[in-house]
Image (cartoon, rainbow, N blue to C red):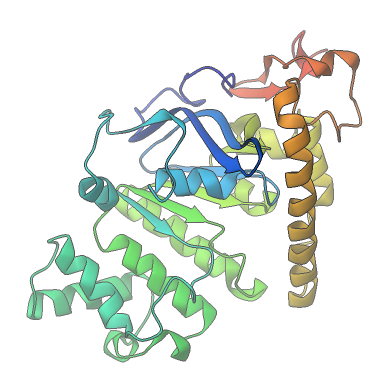
Length: 340
């Protein structure tokens, strides 16, 4: 993990990142008050063929990071370099960086067929010409996400598909421009538990097949461990812990990560339990947003108001401490090293 004010690369220095983020900061203006800092000087890299999981509760700033990387949200400061280039035109950037949204129904136009959703980006980005070449490319995309027979699926509209099928279409659309980076913003949270692993396995297979750099945003520690090589844990816009997925999730060093691990729902949760958990996360998000307005400007550890191990020194900003090989935590508990 890097210091909140540094621009050091992520844990593994090789290979070079295809997308490198340095000191990314996003502030939201607040009526009659100081801006709300949603992302605070965040630095990391995305590498081809690897998955980086960004983990945290609702309201921690995860989706803001994704929106900034997708150029749907203008950062307040910081840089995003694509292939080492700090400046990339919008059209070229979006061909390289594609996003899979959380809600597959909302991300697809109900008035258009699946064929339209896939054909349009193929032609717009010059990947296929109109007519037979586009027909073949649409068929190839549908088959790549296991939607067959392709001709039948192409003729359907979103309301005629299941949630899992809609998300497969959204993934196929993201693949149409042949991107190098895929941003997956909680891509299975709106789906039934029974098909979540199918979609995650599909993303993992596509990442390996196409050599994609994948940013997987989630609140689910179990899937973060299973599908990612590295995990960053975010709290109130700050990454408080990062490192290899097994190290972070099986041996969490930051009190917030431990809290997430202890409160993780069972993988056998029913749909009703999952919905209740989601409602509770949304309620918590509203409460944390109110708390953040009060404490953002105070400095110190952002987690100290909820931390069971809080100390007087936590009123000062904590250092970045190495707690293992490539494993770091932003916490005063480790100021003397992993044995402290």
